[in-house]
Length: 76
Image 1: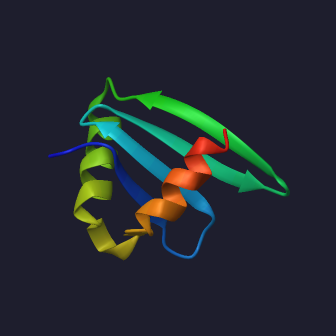
Image 2 (image 1 turned 180 degrees about the vertical axis):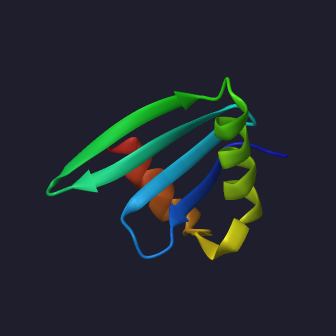
């Protein structure tokens, strides 16, 4: 798989930049601020979370417009 891969929660203003099979960056909009969290998956639940995002499991995530996602992540 070629990284980065972008995902967004369906219906929620939370975005993900998956940078490897064991790491991602999450950006949440809280009011007018963007909150960024870098996660390195070391345990099974975190690794499964990444696999679920990539698979769009249970339609919790959507594939956002790549240009829009890149613009958002470049703001930080």
